[in-house]
Every structure is written in C-alpha cells, then in structure tokens.
Length: 86
Image (cartoon, rainbow, N blue to C red):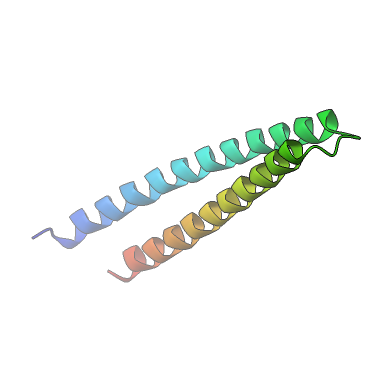
C-alpha cells in the first residue's frame, strides 16, 4: 500500500495530466469553432439539408467538448481537495 506522500505525488501527477488534457480539449474546441464559422460562411444563402446537418453536428460536438472541459475541471478540483485533505 502506498504511503501518504506517494498518494499525494500520484494525485498531483493525475491533476497535471488532466490539465494538459483539458488544454488539448480546448484547442480542439477552438478548431471546431473555426470549422463551424467557415461552414456557416460557406453555406450562407444555402438551405441544403446536408449543410444544416453539418452545422448541427459541429455545434453538438462543440457543446460536448465544453461539457468535457467542465467535467475535467470538476474532477481536478475534487482531486485537489482530496490531496489537501490527506
């Protein structure tokens, strides 16, 4: 069984990794924002169902990435609380 210091080190490493993952998710979200903006500009005046579907899917993906970032931040906060308690 790990001692308290080993647990704290492992939790800190986990939090660091989660922060890097969150930054990666945010970078992907930024790229989706760009793709969505380009699709909207390209589709201006077009009412084709495939364009509407593409925009809707981009928006849904962006929303889910936002949720992933929020959940990751919540997990980081909880892990930090645990590390501070032990």
